[in-house]
Length: 337
Image (cartoon, rainbow, N blue to C red; front, top):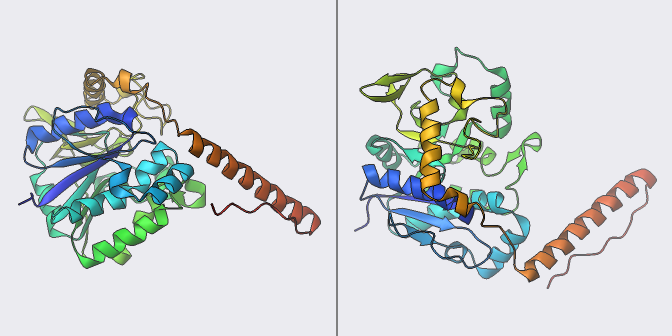
């Protein structure tokens, strides 16, 4: 009988080292919790590693050939990985688990997540907010404006239980991400994440997991108090158990994240050791080698993408001309073949 909760992540091959670090850290505290990883690649790609054990999935496990072609034409690696989240969660539920937990590949488990897994099993939908109650008295207007644009909840931690309303929500979310998984914060979309703001209206049995030590990322730094307690780090008095290194590049170890230029790791105090240690773990997992793996579409898809791009430019030019002259301009139609 499967474990009650299955964990799933999604990564392109250049994130294989991140996946290995995540898998090792999860196995260290939860050896019996299964981890599945969707390896997203436009070409056949062998499993990046066999130790620790991971159940590897491919696009073929989640998509029909027609869906695979359409998604590869529409999205690059980041957008495609984000667009597959509802399908990956649904795959875990379909495989017999009562609940599923999605974790981004650039995460590190630092302590037991038993109570988190219990929450995921108890509620239909569990999400983590970017900001926690402790941050209310330590305003950072620039960060808050950014988070208004990218979403209330962080898409790196998503827990679901197998309930009818969850199945309906995943279907709805999947439908939106087929065409609207884009990086356009000014237009109200940030990949998969902004859609999660609507989730509480779809799933009444909803839990906000606001533990400061869960899904702890750059959006909580440097505002939250980090201290050493019982030989490890704690955030606002809570154990730091799940760290999210979103936007961190081990080749630039002193830059906190590409999303907040100017923040330096060495200025963080105690949390700095987390980033430097994580950089060492990635390099040990052959990060530098996996970074060389490119994202090259097969020749037929490359040609189809060029045609699509040309059609988009033609339509945009026709729209501008029509606004300028008031006359309608005919543009080529996309082939149905």
